[in-house]
Image (cartoon, rainbow, N blue to C red; front, side, top):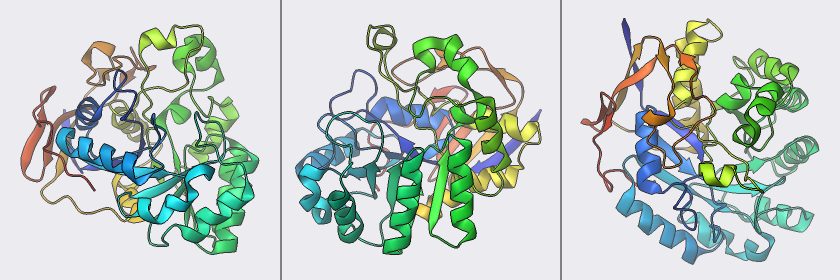
Length: 350
């Protein structure tokens, strides 16, 4: 059995459900899941209830995070036409701004040009703008990056036409980066049909050709692997109106290690996608004396082994090539032999 040592991994796209969805996940359970997955720093999205679009709500979420997190966490601010005047104040506490151009819940969908223009004008240039952009919205995002000459990051790219357009934008020297999720790399429409609500997420799973396109660009156009960890309870998923989203913090690294074992990418490239590039793009701090020890041994993903509060994954029963054996954060062992040792409050708020 081979043991591999990695730097602490960074996930720039998670949903920790605080405030308003703590029955699905909270800061303590979500960061425990992160450590179990070899991830020592995560960025949490703003589509909570209420959403993180005002300084008061964001400050309260930050205070709760400081008390509960086991690994390091940064919070996004959310763009909203109702609260666009709050952007400068939000920037003081948030690591980045998230703009939803496509499907989301609540008041975070931005579909008017004045709000988009205000976001690109008013958000501090030294802090990233991330966009949920699908299909033609990818073109809108790239156009805004060009007009305002500022970097953008496009989240969970899932279609051939999207990744190819981003590749073309990069060829032209435009300041565009992007991420891809493991579920869009390892599942497609056939899995969605097989899993039903348990395979429903946004963007929805693509065709085999879409999946092939993402792999074609994994060593060039793709900048980050991000989980879009979006937990919901099984009761919610089995309801008459199941919400979209799946957990991913604990399965991301084992799946990507399988890709390394299958020679679809190299280990140095995996480190770029899950540590180096996320840290550079989002301007994140170093974590000294931090490492993840991985055992490259065949392992089966099991629901009952998960730390995420929702307790299930669409990858239940899937064999992967490796598992996280030990995680050290700032010189302290925080995960070992299947046990999370970090306590709530041990993590740092970014």
